[in-house]
Image (cartoon, rainbow, N blue to C red; front, side, top):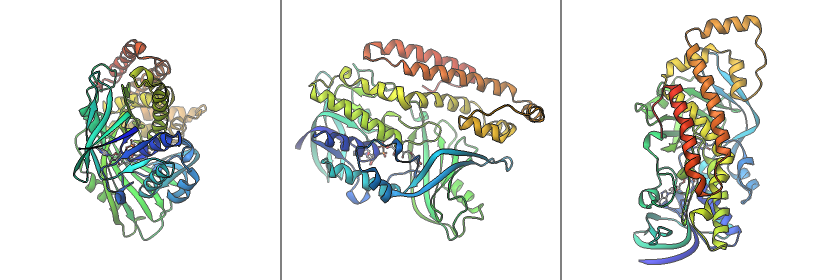
Length: 457
Ligand SMILES: Cc1cc2nc3c(=O)[nH]c(=O)nc-3n(C[C@H](O)[C@H](O)[C@H](O)COP(=O)(O)OP(=O)(O)OC[C@H]3O[C@@H](n4cnc5c(N)ncnc54)[C@H](O)[C@@H]3O)c2cc1C
């Protein structure tokens, strides 16, 4: 077996891996990305291609270059939620413009940038196992490069291998608080096609969503007015759905999609759950999908992967400089995540839990019964303002029969706020973790009881 040695070994050349490598290389560390795909397939990753813009990306790479090369549509200003019951679509305006990108080109640029900043990239390298010292510290990984066995020694291994990372099956996490309470039911199965059409669509400035009966949604994200990313996802605790035919049927039902041709197809699992309670162990940091850093409602994980990779790598660099790669030395990374997007994702997950306890017809009826503008404002986080008396009376009439559910939802909302506040108190050291986790679990028990849902974790 051939052996190589690096300060930081990063498994996976997706968003998390590229941003981790760029961060490490900028700090002057020897870093390598190990990616199972060949170089020409780099960046070819299943995605809806929608992001909020470059604001959420750490400035470790040339973001203007990334934007110029890969952001094919920068004029997204609204989301449209199609109501399958009637034609009262809900529209939500974005505070800043969003974007749809060419995911392959995006992936190529972020890897090119990591290399330009000094990181190595070993393609065709399939990581199969981790190496652990007698005390449990992760000291490297093993795998095959073009069929030849290889070992990579590292001060710290960054797990950026995406959803259902094999490294987590192989690592013995006993003796650390690394979150191993991870099950398939906490993931969403998602599939997307890129289609080309003959006539430009009118909604080139919109992300279009349509709920499906399997408690997921179909999406249409325009890369350009004639190239559309269309996809679908469903939570894996729901009955399975035929994703390809669901897309075909919906595409065919839309007269505005003239002569659609599929030019690319890909699917994958996405963690639609709260972030891992802890994503560090001695010598080991998990980022992005490998640590559940995805918005559990939208399935958007590119910003979370980029940010967590940046924070995790900064903490790793610091630990290496202090010659201490223990769980305690890396712990602050957990706090970085939890007190930022982590608390929001944990709170949003409460609505998923409430939603999965109801069938989609009931949910759609409830949504249809609330005035569209008020719902849109509430979803956008705006003050909805008072309703007029006739509007109030109409709403009371329309929502009749759903009051119990609406009261439930209001209670879940209060608990979700309590949960987010608790994530702000995430402990500064592993010592405080069991007490924090115990209080968090009590809040979750209340949420399961209010929603009448089976425990998710
Ligand atoms: C269909 C679909 C649509 C989505 N739409 C959106 C969207 O519109 N917007 C958004 O923000 N997010 C979206 N997401 C989520 C987003 O794609 C992920 O959250 C994001 O890619 C996570 O980045 P990552 O770097 O953590 O993992 P990944 O991008 O999955 O990268 C992991 C990399 O690790 C490599 N790898 C895995 N195992 C090994 C191994 N053993 N050895 C070597 N290499 C390995 C893989 O080949 C891959 O290149 C979508 C996901 C799916 C599946």
